[in-house]
Image (cartoon, rainbow, N blue to C red; front, side, top):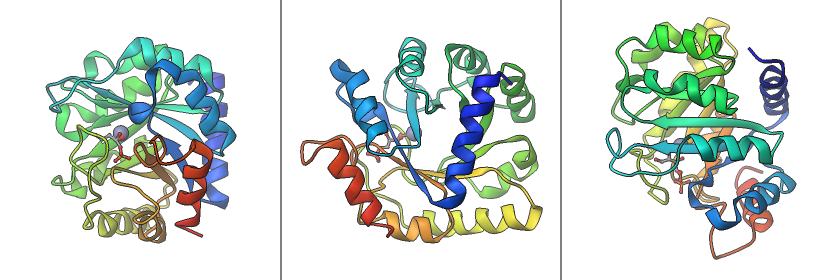
Length: 236
Ligand code: DX5
Ligand code: ZN
């Protein structure tokens, strides 16, 4: 693992031991002002930056790719996570690590040789993350838990920002937290989709460490700082 990635991941891991943190998803940011929007999030206390990569195949939407991930890397010293919502992530995961993503998160549904892929991400210098759609049983990733630094629980069907939080996700987070404790593992538990000031409380209560927020962070209702404050108030 590259030294900077190791440091950024460890800083994130340690911060989350004291208090859950928010990772803004730049999907809802103003791309014309991306650098400013990232700086605003960082000043407001964001602990990581979440980059949603969509290919129009794994999910019915196309978003951003390698050049933007590289630009985000240069804009911040926070940990940068690439959430790959793409088919055959083994074709691009190493390139995202090389572009500067500290955490490269892949879907269990998108690849056949998950163990090999997670190992390749680590060898490429990044922290491997794994994620699963709301309809995929948690048991699908049990075998690879010792290989990852982060598990992302999708709380919407991936593809779009601004969707409604699926309430059954809360029990999945609790089950994953119990499994982590039982197995003595230390991966970060992240939740992605529909996180707002109204939904964040129970998700944190269930044992998540890191909450992705796209439309609740970047919107016309308030500044990034005010929106971050509102989210924080949601979990006390
Ligand atoms: C969903 C993406 C999410 C999304 C979150 O496909 O993976 O990261 O941007 O957006 P909100 O917070 O608006 O649900
Ligand atoms: Zn995401």
